Length: 326
Image (cartoon, rainbow, N blue to C red; front, top):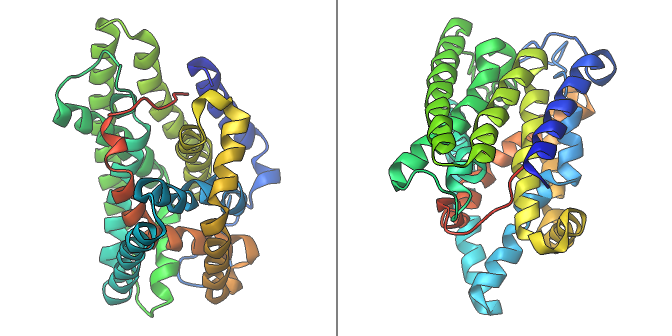
Protein backbone atom coordinates (compact mmCIF):
# COMPACT_ATOMS: atom_id res chain seq x y z
CA UNK A 1 0.00 0.00 0.00
CA UNK A 2 1.52 3.34 -1.03
CA UNK A 3 2.13 6.10 1.49
CA UNK A 4 -0.30 8.61 -0.02
CA UNK A 5 -3.04 6.04 -0.56
CA UNK A 6 -2.79 4.71 3.00
CA UNK A 7 -2.94 8.10 4.70
CA UNK A 8 -5.75 9.18 2.37
CA UNK A 9 -7.80 6.06 3.12
CA UNK A 10 -7.34 6.52 6.86
CA UNK A 11 -8.34 10.19 6.70
CA UNK A 12 -11.26 9.45 4.36
CA UNK A 13 -12.59 6.75 6.68
CA UNK A 14 -12.43 9.13 9.65
CA UNK A 15 -14.24 11.89 7.76
CA UNK A 16 -16.86 9.45 6.45
CA UNK A 17 -17.60 8.24 9.97
CA UNK A 18 -17.87 11.84 11.13
CA UNK A 19 -20.19 12.81 8.26
CA UNK A 20 -22.49 9.86 8.95
CA UNK A 21 -21.95 9.77 12.71
CA UNK A 22 -25.69 9.66 13.36
CA UNK A 23 -25.95 6.38 11.48
CA UNK A 24 -22.79 4.82 12.90
CA UNK A 25 -22.94 5.70 16.57
CA UNK A 26 -25.41 6.57 19.26
CA UNK A 27 -25.15 10.06 20.65
CA UNK A 28 -25.96 8.80 24.14
CA UNK A 29 -23.48 10.17 26.66
CA UNK A 30 -21.85 7.31 28.58
CA UNK A 31 -22.54 7.05 32.29
CA UNK A 32 -19.46 5.23 33.66
CA UNK A 33 -20.13 2.49 36.16
CA UNK A 34 -23.84 2.17 35.46
CA UNK A 35 -25.82 0.11 33.02
CA UNK A 36 -28.43 2.67 32.16
CA UNK A 37 -27.37 5.02 29.37
CA UNK A 38 -23.84 3.61 29.29
CA UNK A 39 -23.83 2.41 25.69
CA UNK A 40 -20.47 3.41 24.24
CA UNK A 41 -20.84 5.34 20.97
CA UNK A 42 -18.85 3.69 18.19
CA UNK A 43 -18.51 0.35 19.97
CA UNK A 44 -19.37 -1.45 16.73
CA UNK A 45 -15.83 -0.86 15.38
CA UNK A 46 -14.50 -3.21 18.05
CA UNK A 47 -17.04 -5.86 17.09
CA UNK A 48 -15.66 -5.69 13.54
CA UNK A 49 -12.08 -5.78 14.85
CA UNK A 50 -12.85 -8.86 16.91
CA UNK A 51 -13.22 -10.90 13.72
CA UNK A 52 -11.37 -8.92 11.04
CA UNK A 53 -7.75 -7.65 11.17
CA UNK A 54 -7.85 -6.54 14.83
CA UNK A 55 -7.91 -9.76 16.85
CA UNK A 56 -6.28 -11.76 14.01
CA UNK A 57 -3.18 -9.53 14.13
CA UNK A 58 -2.64 -10.55 17.75
CA UNK A 59 -3.74 -14.15 17.29
CA UNK A 60 -0.96 -14.53 14.72
CA UNK A 61 1.43 -14.60 17.70
CA UNK A 62 1.11 -18.38 18.02
CA UNK A 63 2.19 -18.84 14.38
CA UNK A 64 5.15 -16.53 15.05
CA UNK A 65 6.10 -18.48 18.17
CA UNK A 66 5.99 -21.70 16.13
CA UNK A 67 8.12 -20.14 13.40
CA UNK A 68 10.77 -19.02 15.88
CA UNK A 69 10.74 -22.27 17.85
CA UNK A 70 11.06 -24.70 14.97
CA UNK A 71 9.66 -27.60 16.98
CA UNK A 72 6.45 -28.54 18.79
CA UNK A 73 8.26 -28.76 22.11
CA UNK A 74 9.79 -25.32 21.69
CA UNK A 75 6.44 -23.86 20.64
CA UNK A 76 4.68 -25.32 23.69
CA UNK A 77 7.39 -23.93 25.99
CA UNK A 78 7.31 -20.43 24.49
CA UNK A 79 3.53 -20.32 24.40
CA UNK A 80 3.46 -21.41 28.05
CA UNK A 81 5.61 -18.37 28.91
CA UNK A 82 3.36 -16.17 26.75
CA UNK A 83 0.27 -17.48 28.58
CA UNK A 84 1.96 -17.01 31.96
CA UNK A 85 2.50 -13.33 31.22
CA UNK A 86 -1.18 -12.99 30.24
CA UNK A 87 -2.27 -14.66 33.47
CA UNK A 88 0.05 -12.41 35.48
CA UNK A 89 -1.57 -9.37 33.86
CA UNK A 90 -5.02 -10.73 34.67
CA UNK A 91 -3.94 -11.22 38.28
CA UNK A 92 -2.60 -7.65 38.38
CA UNK A 93 -5.96 -6.41 37.18
CA UNK A 94 -7.78 -8.24 39.98
CA UNK A 95 -5.32 -7.00 42.61
CA UNK A 96 -4.93 -3.39 41.44
CA UNK A 97 -7.42 -2.65 38.63
CA UNK A 98 -6.94 1.13 38.34
CA UNK A 99 -3.14 0.92 38.32
CA UNK A 100 -3.19 -1.94 35.79
CA UNK A 101 -5.51 -0.06 33.43
CA UNK A 102 -3.39 3.11 33.52
CA UNK A 103 -0.25 1.03 32.97
CA UNK A 104 -1.96 -0.62 30.00
CA UNK A 105 -2.59 2.77 28.39
CA UNK A 106 1.06 3.77 28.71
CA UNK A 107 2.20 0.38 27.37
CA UNK A 108 -0.16 0.83 24.42
CA UNK A 109 1.43 4.20 23.69
CA UNK A 110 4.81 2.48 23.52
CA UNK A 111 3.45 -0.45 21.50
CA UNK A 112 1.64 1.66 18.90
CA UNK A 113 4.65 3.94 18.64
CA UNK A 114 7.28 1.25 18.26
CA UNK A 115 5.12 -0.71 15.82
CA UNK A 116 3.73 2.10 13.65
CA UNK A 117 6.14 5.04 13.68
CA UNK A 118 8.26 5.47 10.56
CA UNK A 119 11.29 5.95 12.81
CA UNK A 120 11.18 2.39 14.15
CA UNK A 121 9.61 0.65 11.17
CA UNK A 122 12.25 0.68 8.42
CA UNK A 123 15.86 -0.50 8.53
CA UNK A 124 16.74 1.41 5.35
CA UNK A 125 15.15 4.70 6.39
CA UNK A 126 17.60 7.58 6.10
CA UNK A 127 16.58 9.02 9.44
CA UNK A 128 17.75 9.29 13.02
CA UNK A 129 20.67 6.96 13.72
CA UNK A 130 20.48 7.04 17.52
CA UNK A 131 18.37 4.14 18.82
CA UNK A 132 17.08 6.01 21.86
CA UNK A 133 16.11 9.05 19.77
CA UNK A 134 14.22 6.79 17.33
CA UNK A 135 12.35 5.30 20.24
CA UNK A 136 11.60 8.72 21.69
CA UNK A 137 10.10 9.76 18.35
CA UNK A 138 8.12 6.52 18.24
CA UNK A 139 6.80 7.00 21.78
CA UNK A 140 5.71 10.52 20.82
CA UNK A 141 3.68 9.02 17.95
CA UNK A 142 1.98 6.54 20.30
CA UNK A 143 1.38 9.17 22.98
CA UNK A 144 -0.48 11.41 20.52
CA UNK A 145 -2.70 8.56 19.32
CA UNK A 146 -3.70 7.34 22.79
CA UNK A 147 -3.80 10.66 24.66
CA UNK A 148 -5.78 12.69 22.09
CA UNK A 149 -9.20 11.22 22.99
CA UNK A 150 -8.56 12.00 26.67
CA UNK A 151 -7.78 15.61 25.81
CA UNK A 152 -10.97 16.16 23.82
CA UNK A 153 -13.40 13.87 25.66
CA UNK A 154 -11.84 12.82 28.97
CA UNK A 155 -14.82 11.23 30.72
CA UNK A 156 -16.02 9.28 27.68
CA UNK A 157 -12.45 8.11 26.97
CA UNK A 158 -12.03 6.69 30.45
CA UNK A 159 -15.57 5.24 30.56
CA UNK A 160 -14.70 1.71 29.29
CA UNK A 161 -12.05 1.38 31.98
CA UNK A 162 -14.46 2.54 34.69
CA UNK A 163 -16.81 -0.23 33.54
CA UNK A 164 -13.99 -2.78 33.84
CA UNK A 165 -13.05 -1.68 37.36
CA UNK A 166 -16.73 -1.58 38.38
CA UNK A 167 -16.85 -5.30 37.57
CA UNK A 168 -14.63 -5.76 40.65
CA UNK A 169 -16.58 -3.29 42.74
CA UNK A 170 -13.91 -0.59 42.35
CA UNK A 171 -14.74 3.00 41.52
CA UNK A 172 -11.98 4.02 39.10
CA UNK A 173 -13.49 7.39 38.18
CA UNK A 174 -10.91 10.13 37.65
CA UNK A 175 -11.44 13.91 37.49
CA UNK A 176 -12.15 15.12 33.98
CA UNK A 177 -9.78 18.07 34.42
CA UNK A 178 -6.95 15.72 35.38
CA UNK A 179 -7.59 13.38 32.46
CA UNK A 180 -7.82 16.26 29.99
CA UNK A 181 -4.73 17.94 31.43
CA UNK A 182 -2.55 14.87 31.21
CA UNK A 183 -3.96 14.06 27.77
CA UNK A 184 -3.34 17.58 26.48
CA UNK A 185 0.21 17.64 27.83
CA UNK A 186 1.04 14.36 26.10
CA UNK A 187 -0.64 15.42 22.85
CA UNK A 188 1.10 18.77 22.49
CA UNK A 189 4.47 17.46 23.67
CA UNK A 190 4.12 14.49 21.36
CA UNK A 191 3.19 16.61 18.36
CA UNK A 192 6.19 18.83 19.01
CA UNK A 193 8.56 15.88 19.06
CA UNK A 194 6.89 14.35 15.98
CA UNK A 195 7.23 17.66 14.10
CA UNK A 196 10.95 17.87 14.90
CA UNK A 197 11.43 14.32 13.65
CA UNK A 198 9.52 15.14 10.47
CA UNK A 199 11.74 18.15 9.77
CA UNK A 200 14.82 15.98 10.25
CA UNK A 201 13.52 13.34 7.83
CA UNK A 202 12.70 15.99 5.23
CA UNK A 203 16.19 17.48 5.45
CA UNK A 204 17.70 14.01 5.14
CA UNK A 205 15.92 13.45 1.83
CA UNK A 206 12.94 11.34 2.95
CA UNK A 207 9.95 13.63 2.24
CA UNK A 208 7.48 10.74 2.01
CA UNK A 209 8.37 9.41 5.44
CA UNK A 210 8.45 12.97 6.79
CA UNK A 211 4.88 13.57 5.65
CA UNK A 212 3.67 10.21 6.97
CA UNK A 213 5.28 10.79 10.37
CA UNK A 214 3.14 13.92 10.80
CA UNK A 215 0.04 12.96 8.81
CA UNK A 216 -0.88 9.79 10.73
CA UNK A 217 -0.78 11.37 14.23
CA UNK A 218 -2.56 14.44 12.82
CA UNK A 219 -5.41 12.30 11.48
CA UNK A 220 -5.55 10.51 14.83
CA UNK A 221 -5.98 13.88 16.56
CA UNK A 222 -8.67 14.83 14.04
CA UNK A 223 -10.48 11.56 14.69
CA UNK A 224 -10.33 12.17 18.44
CA UNK A 225 -11.81 15.63 17.97
CA UNK A 226 -14.76 14.62 15.79
CA UNK A 227 -15.54 11.00 16.75
CA UNK A 228 -16.47 9.22 19.96
CA UNK A 229 -13.29 8.07 21.76
CA UNK A 230 -13.98 4.35 21.44
CA UNK A 231 -14.53 4.83 17.72
CA UNK A 232 -11.49 7.07 17.20
CA UNK A 233 -9.11 4.59 18.84
CA UNK A 234 -10.84 1.67 17.17
CA UNK A 235 -10.36 3.16 13.71
CA UNK A 236 -6.64 3.67 14.33
CA UNK A 237 -6.27 0.19 15.80
CA UNK A 238 -8.05 -1.43 12.87
CA UNK A 239 -6.87 0.69 9.92
CA UNK A 240 -3.31 1.50 10.95
CA UNK A 241 -1.82 -0.64 13.70
CA UNK A 242 -3.41 -4.04 13.07
CA UNK A 243 -3.48 -3.60 9.28
CA UNK A 244 0.24 -2.80 9.11
CA UNK A 245 0.94 -5.84 11.27
CA UNK A 246 -1.11 -8.13 9.03
CA UNK A 247 0.61 -6.77 5.92
CA UNK A 248 3.99 -7.45 7.47
CA UNK A 249 3.42 -10.96 8.77
CA UNK A 250 1.39 -11.94 5.71
CA UNK A 251 4.32 -11.21 3.42
CA UNK A 252 4.56 -7.90 1.57
CA UNK A 253 5.54 -9.75 -1.62
CA UNK A 254 2.14 -11.43 -1.75
CA UNK A 255 0.25 -8.19 -2.38
CA UNK A 256 -1.85 -6.49 0.30
CA UNK A 257 -5.02 -8.57 -0.04
CA UNK A 258 -3.25 -11.92 -0.15
CA UNK A 259 -0.99 -10.87 2.73
CA UNK A 260 -3.95 -10.00 4.95
CA UNK A 261 -5.79 -13.20 4.02
CA UNK A 262 -2.67 -15.24 4.76
CA UNK A 263 -2.27 -13.55 8.16
CA UNK A 264 -5.91 -14.33 9.01
CA UNK A 265 -5.57 -17.95 7.93
CA UNK A 266 -2.45 -18.52 10.02
CA UNK A 267 -4.02 -16.81 13.04
CA UNK A 268 -6.97 -19.23 13.24
CA UNK A 269 -5.57 -21.66 15.87
CA UNK A 270 -5.33 -18.83 18.43
CA UNK A 271 -8.03 -16.59 16.95
CA UNK A 272 -10.95 -18.93 17.66
CA UNK A 273 -10.20 -19.44 21.39
CA UNK A 274 -9.43 -15.71 21.74
CA UNK A 275 -12.85 -14.81 20.34
CA UNK A 276 -14.43 -17.32 22.72
CA UNK A 277 -12.65 -15.68 25.68
CA UNK A 278 -13.89 -12.23 24.63
CA UNK A 279 -17.44 -13.55 24.30
CA UNK A 280 -17.18 -14.96 27.82
CA UNK A 281 -15.73 -11.70 29.17
CA UNK A 282 -18.64 -9.81 27.59
CA UNK A 283 -21.26 -11.62 29.66
CA UNK A 284 -20.76 -9.52 32.84
CA UNK A 285 -21.12 -6.36 30.72
CA UNK A 286 -24.30 -7.52 28.93
CA UNK A 287 -26.41 -4.75 30.49
CA UNK A 288 -24.46 -2.24 28.38
CA UNK A 289 -25.88 -3.71 25.17
CA UNK A 290 -24.29 -6.35 22.96
CA UNK A 291 -21.91 -4.09 20.99
CA UNK A 292 -20.64 -2.06 24.00
CA UNK A 293 -20.29 -5.28 26.00
CA UNK A 294 -18.13 -6.84 23.29
CA UNK A 295 -16.10 -3.64 22.94
CA UNK A 296 -15.34 -3.42 26.67
CA UNK A 297 -14.58 -7.15 26.78
CA UNK A 298 -12.23 -6.90 23.80
CA UNK A 299 -10.35 -3.96 25.34
CA UNK A 300 -10.14 -5.85 28.66
CA UNK A 301 -8.72 -8.82 26.76
CA UNK A 302 -6.12 -6.44 25.32
CA UNK A 303 -5.19 -5.40 28.88
CA UNK A 304 -4.13 -9.01 29.45
CA UNK A 305 -2.74 -9.79 25.99
CA UNK A 306 -0.82 -6.66 25.02
CA UNK A 307 2.18 -7.22 27.35
CA UNK A 308 3.14 -10.66 25.94
CA UNK A 309 2.27 -9.49 22.42
CA UNK A 310 4.57 -6.49 22.83
CA UNK A 311 7.37 -8.61 24.30
CA UNK A 312 7.13 -11.07 21.42
CA UNK A 313 7.50 -8.39 18.75
CA UNK A 314 9.95 -6.21 20.66
CA UNK A 315 12.93 -7.22 18.51
CA UNK A 316 11.07 -6.56 15.25
CA UNK A 317 9.87 -3.21 16.59
CA UNK A 318 13.45 -1.97 16.88
CA UNK A 319 13.59 -1.28 13.17
CA UNK A 320 15.80 -4.29 12.35
CA UNK A 321 13.60 -5.27 9.43
CA UNK A 322 11.65 -3.27 6.88
CA UNK A 323 7.92 -3.07 7.46
CA UNK A 324 5.29 -1.78 5.08
CA UNK A 325 4.25 1.85 5.33
CA UNK A 326 0.94 3.51 4.74
